[in-house]
Image (cartoon, rainbow, N blue to C red):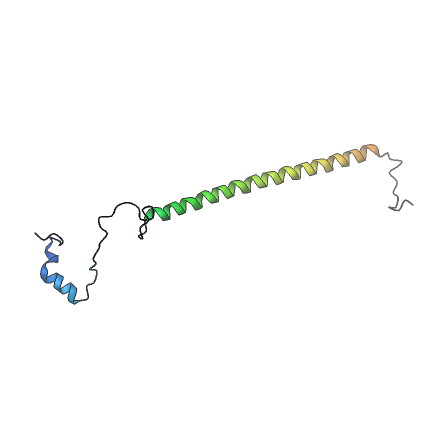
Length: 112
């Protein structure tokens, strides 16, 4: 039995010769078949599915963090707007209670 050959009939010696005559389509020599593990973590040149998956998860996490930050920022802005509105209401209420109808006569802004 040949150690580095397929044992199927379609890979018989005449078929292999025909592949080489046709330019060796889909015929590759692989030297790193016994390597194991993730290429990037082992500092190898080949890519791994996990790098794209990890990058996708990082992006999703960043999107979630940004959404949470945006929500907090929006909530803070609403609270600030509510404070400003409350202070304006208080000022309006204090102005209306301190002024009497007799003093409510319209005067010009220059005091005349």
